[in-house]
Amino acid sequence: MTTLSAATVPTNAECRSMLPDGRVLTITASRRPRANRADVKCTVAGAPAIAERMQEVVRLARHTEVRLDSRDQVVLSMDIAPGSADRDWELAAVLADRMVRGLYQSMYAGCEHAQGWSDAWHLGRVHGAVGDGAAGTLHITHLGALSGHADPSSGVSTVRAWFPLHSGGINDSLAWVEVSVFAIESPPDGEAATSEEDTIAAPGLDLSAQQEVRQTLAGARHFDAKGLGRWRSVVRFSQPRFQGGSYQLALVMADRLARGREFVPRGRIIATGCSSAWHAGRVDTVEGRQPKLELILMQATAGDRVLLPKAWEPELPPGFVAELRQRGASVACIERIGMI
Image (cartoon, rainbow, N blue to C red; front, side):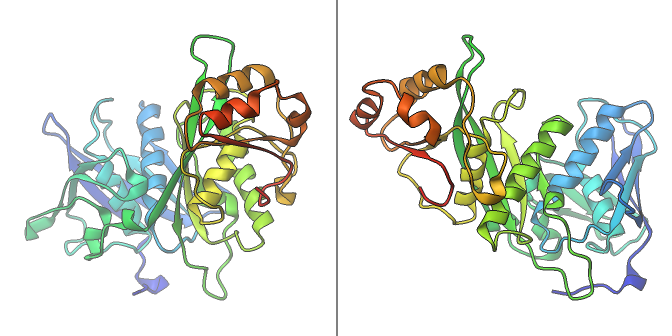
């Protein structure tokens, strides 16, 4: 892989995008030492929601980059605010972020135009085209095409696991948590190692829930002994608004399956459990045992593998295990991961 010397990496970069009303929006990216600040900061005057979306887009688009260096902070801004429904500026933000970090070089510095958006930036997918100044327009469907590479989504492993989402109402269901992992290179000698939590994105969650997700995965990977510092990850939920930590075991299992640490079941992994010691692999109990068991029993199908806290085993309703087996599903009550 070709790398750029520090002297050739710019401290500022710009990329433009045309809005539906014909105005040209300029996204400016600047780079500075991180100094314990956020890895990406975005500002759009009078449009905080657009700034939040730009930060999410940039972070997700970094998912399939082979190298991860979080020593610098990238600050992105727009000179004018697009409409709330406009999204064609997203690719311009991604390119500005890559240019200022030396990962993408335009043939026409200062004249880069881009139109494109995506609902799957973490897979490197793009809808739209990137213009390269006087060289014309390059139509792309994935970010790898910018450098002549293969579709980066082929290197992403994505797995879902399900957990009972119970609130005592008609919306009770088996919700899913999805983990996408992409292998990254270890930093060269002399470069600062990146913390595991810096490699994990959880778009759509509030800040406290994002932190819980990062701490859960970092702890469970510590239990692997060789699980740290090797992956960039994106975590998504079918229902991003919920309370409690009973999803944690499902999250850990999806991550372990995505990283090849577990045998793949014939059907779904359905799991509930949390832990105050994931670094030791321990699985603790959670509240709502009875309604959650009823929900699992109602929705489990052939091939499903149900994982419950060991503390629940003496309290399982009569016939619960037998009925699951009759449906073609299986169940295990566990006290540790890695022993399932």
